[in-house]
Amino acid sequence: MKRSEILSRLLVIVGVVFVLSVPLVVRFYDGQGIVEIHARMAESGGWSPSSIQAQVGVPLYLRLTSDDVMHSFAIGQSDMLPVDVAPGKMTELTLTFDKPGTYTYYCTRWCGPNHWRMRGTIEVSGGSSDAPQPVSPPLYMTLNLNIDAPHPAPVTPAERPSALRGAAFAAMLSSNYLMPDYYRTHSPAQAYLDLRADSALSSLSDPNVWDLVAYIWRSNTTPDGLAKGQQLFAQNCTACHG
Image 1 (cartoon, helix red, strand yellow):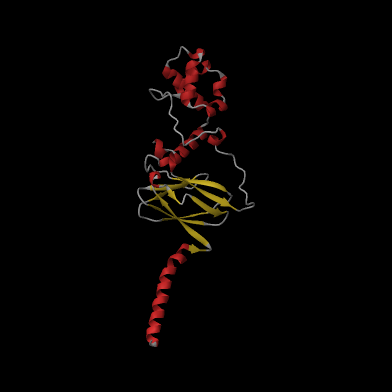
Image 2 (image 1 turned 90 degrees about the horizontal axis):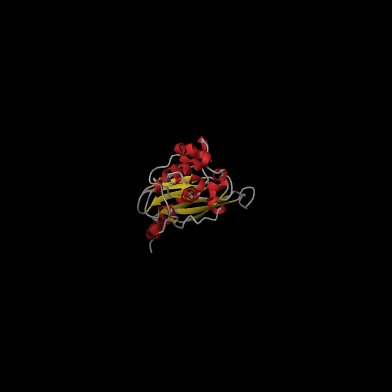
């Protein structure tokens, strides 16, 4: 074999190796790998991967894409705004966590009947201790509620209740109904049934009782709390509940 032929073959091999190595170089920099996340409707698998590992203080590089419809990416326990995840496009995102723990990521765009199942987790370790810092569990865990199970309301109001109208009947309410522990452990439908069965309120119409339910919930919040609730609802709930 001629030297020129050997040299040509070596150049071809080097070229092939270089081309194959480019994606690896692109996918790793600063010693941290890029995690590529694919979004699909929950019926087709949801997020892939659905579990990611990260370290406190170490940037986590993400590349997000959708394999079907428009999705979005948001993370609980953070102030990060949702990021659109479009079909056939890559969206790059860099995250840095300042404390260990389990962070849930989810879709905030209505993408199908089981949109609410579009959830994944980022397990963040490291920091001052490898053990996650103690945090208060979500209220649904404290109350042992299965949020994935159907929770149909046994009764619903015929018209929109008004806390303002309900205030006119507030003097008829037992103070037990106004305690935070009551409204945290009862749904509005359950509260309506309790109030409807209360003999002290038997003279009220059904709409009046629903107004009292609204008054109970309104009495347990503040203007700042309502504003924060509106923000959280818009970010986390609007996609399903409008």
